[in-house]
Each structure stands twice: as C-alpha cells, then as structure tokens.
Length: 150
Length: 482
Image (cartoon, rainbow over all chains, first blue to last red; front, top):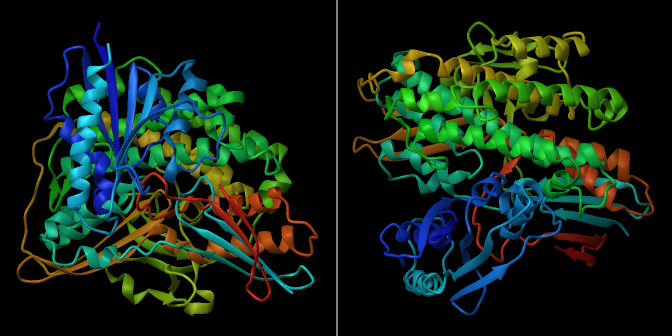
C-alpha cells in the first residue's frame, strides 16, 4: 500500500530566502517520486491550528522551512509531539501542531523537519544563489528519504 | 534605582512585540511602553510595481489576515481603474463580501478559541505550560475541536472565493476573477454537519453564550480589567448598520457623541493624522478634530459595536441589543468586552456567509467592470482587528509611486499602550515581587486587541522569547529566554 506523504513548505516568499519552504513545495509539483509513495505538497505562510486536522490523514508529514542556523545547509530530523509549549500564532512550531493533533485525534503521523539554510531574509522576492543551491540539496535529501519509505 | 521589565514578544500574538515597564526605586510604575521591533518598509517595497499587482503584493504583509489587505488594495485600485464602489457587478461585490466575511469568521474563531480562551479557562495565574491551546485541547477537547473546525470552515470559504487559502488572487481592479460554482456553494450548504453553514451559526451562537456565562461568573474581572474611556472609529454602512466590507467613516467619543459623522473615507487625510514617536516604529494615528493629545481612538470589534446603530442579521442583532443594553446604549469602554463583541461579530459573519451562499448572484458571469483610469485611489475595509486604510498613487506608466497604509494594529497603538499602563498601575505598582501572573495580565490586556504586529520571517531559529530586567541606570540585571 502506498504511503501518503504530506510536505508543508513553510515561509514568506516576500522575504527572500524565507521562501525556501514554499519553493520546495512548488518544486515537488515537478518531481517524479517512487511508486511506493503518494506525495502532497502544501504551501503555508506559517503553520496554524487547523493543520492538526489536515495532517491526520497522512502516514508521514515533513515540515520544510528555511533555517538561520550556521551548519549544515540541509538537515532532516525526526520530531515528536510537544507536550505543552507556549503558543504563538506567528511561530506555531511543528512539534506543537503535532501535539495538538495527538490531543484532538488520538494519533499523529511520523514527522520530520527539513531545515534548509537561508542567507538573505530581507524584503524582496526570489532566493539568493546560496539558497538555490541548498534547495537543490534539500530535494535530493527528501528524495533519498522517500526512496527508503516502504 | 528603577527597574525596567521587558516582556518580548507578547505570547500568542502574531508578529514581534515588546513591552517595557519602567519602575522607579520605590517600585512605582514610572513609564510603560508597547514597542514594535520589526521594521517593514513595505510601503517603499511596492513603489515602482504595476498597480494591478498591489492586491497580491500587499498580502505579504500578513499570514493571518492577508484577505483584508487584498481587499483594501483591490478597493483602492478599483478607483484607479475608474470603477467606483457602487459600480462593481453584483457578482463581484458579493464574492468579495463572501471572501471577507469568511476571513472575519476564521480570524475571530482563531483568536478567541486559541488565544484568549486559555486565559479565560485557566486564569492569568495558571501554569504557562497549560495556558495555551494544547492545554485547552487536553481539558476542553470539544472547545478545541470546534475552534479548529470553525477556522477550517472559514479558510475553505476563502479558498473557494480567492483561489487559495493564503495569498489568493480573487479580487482584481474592477472586480473579481472567478465566481462561485454551484458545486462550490453546495460544499458549504449541503454537506453533513459540522462543516456546513448552519452548524457554524450554531457553534458561533454557542460561543457567545459561553462568554455571557463566563461574564456572569467573572463580572468584576471582565468589567474592570483595563477599562478606560476612549474614542471609537469604524466604517458603518450608510444606514448605520455594521458592515465589514464598505461604508462611511464614523467616530464617537467615550460618551457617544459623534466626532466624525459618516464621512466619505476617500478624504481620510482631512480627518486622520499620524504622529511619529522616537521609541517605536509604529505610528500613532489621531483624529485631527481633537488633536494629537486627545484624538487617539480604538478600532476593532469593540469600536465597531460602539459606532454602528444595528447589525443586519437577526441572531447577532439580538446579541447586539443585549451588549448595548449592558451600558445603557452608551459606548462600552471595557477592554475585555472586546471578546464579547468579537464573538457577536463571529455570529454575524456566519449568518452573512449563509445568506451570501444562498444568493444566486454568486454564480453570475459579470465579473469585471472598466472605467476611466485615475492616478489615485483609497480603499478601506474593516479587518478583523479594525479599520484598515490603503492609499496609493500611480504615474502615467501605471506604476505605484506612493503607498500609505494604516493597518488596524497601528490604529490601536495608543489604546494598547493605555491598556498596558492600566495593568502596570493596577497590578504591578508598588509590588515587591513581579510574578508570572502579573506579567501575563499585561499580555491579556494586549491580546484583547488581537494585534497583528506584521508577520515577517518564519525561519527556524528565529523568534526567541526574551524577558529583560534593567535597573535605573539601564543595566540589565535579569534575562529570560524561551
């Protein structure tokens, strides 16, 4: 049976490399995936509470977002639902949405954060050259991960 | 020596904000300020772009209420395109109204159920680890599920009208680029509960009843907390009805006397000034008729129910009559009554949504009108948080040369500062120890205004929460990070 994968591409495309998440979600529409998975990409300016309802129909959810950390340029890490953390609608963390899904619906999909390093977060559209390279690497990382899913 | 306590950012509120409270050596409140820390530069960013891009560009301002900016910019660009508010086709105006009321419904539901309800259900002194939406889900699961689904319903309305839930392209200068198909309409009217319009009305009524019941049991808190007199401003329909999409500008003072008597908003600069202060990037709008000192005003649900004469849907009108009767039909100046007003508006939005869905004009095919181009346009809407002003000028090459935006939260800048000051004077003043509960009361006061402090980047690793304490010499003596 095919695994149902949900990829949230999170960020503001009006803030340069903050648009890395949405750019990844967009790139998924032009990507060929292994036959064992069915991938749905969704753009999110930011996560919100109703995403707890959206994700419960999937087997795996990947939260793709720009990162301001130094190294490495792309990481894919498994996350667990958060017990109880402070809520802000501006920055509702992936683990918080998982936590809400767990409380409301009694279960969560397997979840990962795909962090893609950005360089330029000024007001403006389009990714920096470095972000474009990191986006390519992120797609490779995601595809390798999906090939291992069965 | 005095102490400065900083709460940054305000939890459970969009965007970046900072609260600073200065205490003197005796622990007395010397000064309070509510700051914004993010500089947008958006008004310069849109300059040089073709005017027809404005309704889509301005949605970048916010991920919670992009529809408000989308429609305010579209209304301004209607004027530029030579199409007045009364010249839109019925299909175009009603599609925009459906989009707007869908947004109002979901935004208000989001705020009350998941920003305010944790405080109301658990109290200001509750452990912050549970005073959030996860805590609500743990102990009040039905309420949390309702909030999620009400928000989802509103978002689906936006998607059906704007094309997308976030940053849709539905409104264009002179009209709209899609109608609502019968199939799309039926997905909201004829599906089983709970995701249909009738059920949303029932839940919205339940939310108003919840608050009224809560108010009865906590009257002193709700009535007394951050209550202070103010002027109130909003759009009203020409006949005085509550209207979120279009109307004339009305302002009343704390006693109900009209300061702005239903003026055409295209001349807003004759009536509204903007003061700049050195310690904030946000401006301080004021009514010119009253001057900078006394001309500040509230916008948003409380202001709207203070300025309008009636609500044109039956269930919300009944609640409105109870709301106005509570203050003997005088303006209500109690900050936490904003929650009551917001829930009445949520009910009204649900009723309007159902009425619009049943209107066959939504399936019409007259979508865009044209007129003689002009070089300037002003568009106002009532966003969930209050009156939103968009004003543009263009050149002969159709490029934007000037943009002036007064967003709802900017309109509420002074009221939020007053609310913070009230809490500081009544809760923190002369206290030997500043507790988490005291600091949370400051945030409760601000959250009643549901401020959007301009969502900016959403990168992982941003948005640390800092609380800083400074002595009277400006030296930091304490710091917390979340």
